[in-house]
Length: 523
Image (cartoon, rainbow, N blue to C red; front, side):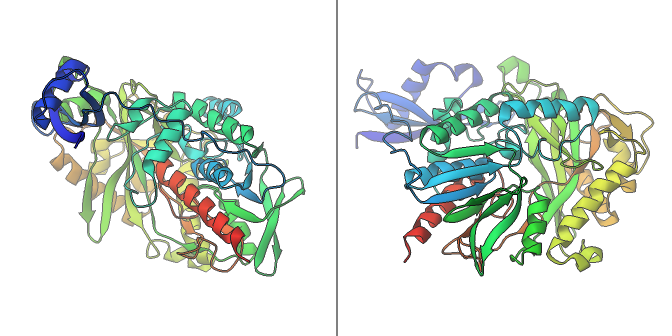
């Protein structure tokens, strides 16, 4: 064969030495060193399991000369017009925008409606919640162009390899300004300071190819004829008609779940996870994971992934942000929600991770009277308790030193934190439901035994991490991806309960757009 793939190991100091990497790859492939033979790294990961940290590379060796430059994904796509079939897409997150681009490829004109603002304008509202505790219910860390992912890190790792072409999703992101490293990194990441511009560029492509994107368009009703959807009503009572509707509203659009229930559109409660966000000084994580060699080997900020079983439930780290920040992610006044993010350089002196435990109908049994919204009301009750227990009207978050959390003590003071609104010393036992608190407390003790140095009072526990995934699923047919009862309605992404992260949501958006095209071809 003219192309072979080989795996090699290099030291951090050798990572940028393309000549050395080429020579090692040729040796591994058993090929002579001739000018026409090329070596291209197609996968890269850090291995810190031994005391000597190394990079593992997968290299494609070719005797056919340099790789041919791949065309951009959107090359040669014909623009759509108002004469094309139309799909309304509710939500401008990854599911919505990737559904829109896929729809255009298939000759369907998308109209994307988002309740929030464009990515640039949205930043003013993020400053307002950070600095003044003002929560705009339509424009915040969860709502607005790009969805919750735009300003919470841009992690692109996914296990959804059977859902579609991950490469196509990543190449679309690169074509719109993401760094090419995301094509080879085992845990690709863009960074909140860069992702907003990528999202804006995706919107520009949708508009250039004939699609429509409208902001400040909160959907307040559906236009239904018997068991078929014909369009939507937005906040100013304007009606918008289309041949199909994709619901891609994200995991926090509680009003959409309530609207579905009010309009007899089937929804169901689903398990999710709740807990806290735990922040360490980054140097502690670096020393544990890299054996004190981060500065010596010029390594990136270290991360971790922890999981254990407490009784019949899992406790696990979630959305770990090395060199990151904790941010306020409430979507309504009167609640405290936190999330994590990192900039592209991951150069904050702090590392944070959600630390959560699975919850289900046993946990939210007292809210069972709310039917399919029982899990949502349980989630909401924790967030509101987190707000009210502080006796103040701002976004300062309840917090506790990690060892005090483990030992059940109130913290006399709190360490420095990346959380800009500030922290208030309050025991987590006063906020979290008792079963959740107990599981987290036992889980964190296990993590401390597993990861030497993790259990330290230099770390701080911050409440509450509750938007891990949607507490509601909008059921759809497994084959057609259409709602199980409403024709023309296609639930998609995290909010519908079918994705968990940027890439899996984008893949689901593409799949749903394909399903819309199939449905529109039906007689």
